[in-house]
Image 1: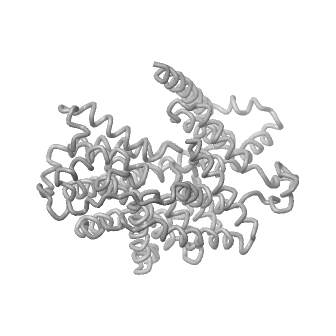
Image 2 (image 1 turned 90 degrees about the horizontal axis):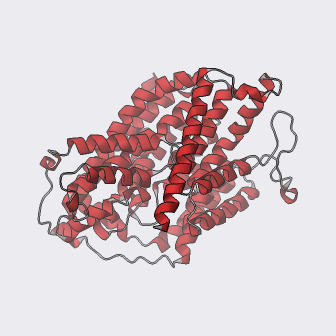
Image 3 (image 1 turned 90 degrees about the vertical axis):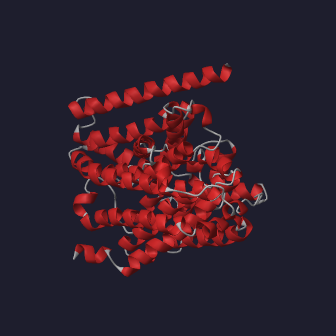
Length: 497
């Protein structure tokens, strides 16, 4: 009966629709998988959560995979996770191997996605069972550790990572405190509107959809694309699965790195592809060929960024901590259905757990079939002008925000406000993902802190005397902070030399 709820024609159809939409958003430069999921999230309110997960996970997989098309054909990464695909994919196109490069990238994406799905299946349930034993103290420390990871991996900008993450926490504290119904942090002029705080949906749509469109509007949404699809019609060398004969270690290493980066909160696909690409170059027998059109670079980049998909879901489904910006948006899908993700999610919702696994498997396989065989036709989506797409997307964003709380106009103003914030963050080259993760975790951070103090009658020593798990988490936090200081100093030193 459980699988009868999952294996329905409607679910698979919505997964396919989500995949196509994701590929479109990933292939059009300036549009991302996170943007796709954020824009279409309000529409999922009309469906059962199983159907919604098929739709959203299809967009996730399609958005990450679609980014390789412009990266290889026009040297513009469709998504941040396809940055390093340009390095060798575009040179292959210039010498008439565009179709071969695309098919190598698509096959690598499938392998990385399936590997991360296997890791999700194997490691999430035991991690969740372990996390069930956590008290409020351990849960509080886990969230602090997640926030320090954001800073530790901010590439020399430790204080920026801390500041942006805890700014999200500060915004999340606006509203009333549930335990005693007293005001926490509410600006006087918005006291009535913010009595329940900012809604999640307008915040994430504003940051990752409207903010991106504001940035594109500033540049005039110019589609400076040189048409290289002609290279697909006259390829000098055809694709063969024998291309992967000597790539087993590269595939395994890149899959592992992509999945591990996905597990780390707030790191993102760009870090995954850069790390995998540099490691592939380091261990290569011919590192001088990287950047000239070698398939090793395309394989490393595309395997790792799809390995991110399953990896980012591991901390989300086991501890309620999103691994990247897209999984942070997925929290909104569960919130719309009145569900909370955490250690008990798998035990209490086996149907939804199996839905995630089946949807990811289906979408990865369907992604390969959809993109591999008709790649010459799929590649043409990069020429769709953004100035025609964005007005439709803006209307969808406004309607979705207004509908989020059953017709509250303040949510529309919140959408615009956070769209402006997202635009400002981008202008100053500040990451929006730590802000969103801080916003999502801020409420739980406060709740677990208060619950821990209640259990100890206000004694702060409870955070240091709970036992081995507590001490181990403090060691992780200290190590993360020390690593942040080290990378921050290293970044400043390299900048001065």
